[in-house]
Length: 585
Ligand code: GTP
Ligand code: SPV
Ligand code: MN
Image (tube, rainbow, N blue to C red; front, top):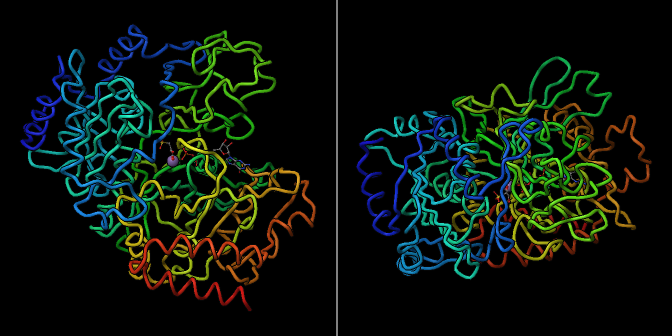
């Protein structure tokens, strides 16, 4: 399908290494994908769901040891350890290649290798980047066909001499002790072995569009971020764009597809989804910051998604969607915790066993997912395919904080905003293997995704700000939907009601809303609570900045930054000193 020598030479090498019985080029045609679906159903790799209720929908179950990203087995293999930084696992490239080559040797014997040419971003846009993934999993092919733009037209765009990111995936026997997700940024190469779970194997997503792309962005003067992108339309029909970085399973998909509360909807407010997980940001010719969603689909968390919390996401999953590790109903449709109440009396749970509603086990895995085409989403933005992206008015950081962070606050300027992003923290979730609910520092929600030394990443953020005039740069905010009361209940209703906070954010960008300056930044004097059952006291508590609690947090921030030693940028040190002085005033 191509004359590109770099592609053909690399492919020959990978065939010699893995020894597949057969090599199949993915051309992107519906006929080929349909044949692969049939093959996956015949082999048991996928289950065809009820085609009347869920047309074009399939089900896949991963091994129980293979249900989330594995951060302790994810490596950034730069020439030196310092380039990868204290935030990444590192091994010398030569040592890692030797280890991996032994694991890949003959790994595709008796199997088929699929060659997937794919584009992150609209094909041919100057924003976009091309990758080629070699995999022995049909599940990966079918997911990549939803999550990225694939096939022959990508190769045409690559041409005879174009460069691409080399991605090799072998499923092997999903042995967790020999599972590796490895990036060689200097070779533009990704290698994944012994997994079949999304974030570990859909190599266009976190591996390319964040880890490799963040490295390229630093080199080339742009940014790859773990951010949703949304357009907020006001009753006059004007649309303002916001990008928001929250850690995994902390509400990006939900916010990106938000439906405003009834009275705001009636006034004419609307939210349009441009992206739900990844944003590539560049400064445009007019000096503003533009965002493109490099993906073509949503790999969303299923549990908690319902007609009430996120009807747009639910609607997006009603056709041509792949469900992974959710539960199956007696009607051969899908179910997960939070979808409906009460739970069905009987289900097949995510591991394949019988489940009844008196079971104490979860029917769907907490990190079970849907892979849905973006075009299925009822609120998909008309700018979704815009090759130049959308201009950002605001950037929002956020996390799960039971205490400490107020509902919303605004940075004084870009530099302060970078500090707020760099000191983000959140309680861990099921999206990554390991303990859940532990507070960890997760700068810009990129802790697991920065493909180089995070101190340099902070420096890159500061430099990007210096390239923009203050009146053109997006304003920076921080939100926390997850504050808990004494009994452990969420104090803020969240979901659609987050629109109230977005409105304050946009009003601030336009100089139309009031705020008080506190030690940590500007906090609203009030938030619109029309029709909400929320007392003045609770709202006050939600917006409260407790200096004593923040002093403790500052100690944690200092401890976190200490690991970067001399590399920590001066801008971060300046902001730390300002915060300390403010807290001691
Ligand atoms: P990744 O795909 O892992 O990057 O996750 P995400 O950031 O897109 O998170 P998502 O929107 O899928 O939400 C994850 C979980 O948070 C779900 O269980 C949601 O129900 C819950 N959630 C999302 N928004 C809110 C909110 O405003 N309030 C509360 N309390 N929970 C929320
Ligand atoms: C996340 O964990 O942030 C996800 C899912 O969006 S994964 O593709 O597994 O990374
Ligand atoms: Mn994510």
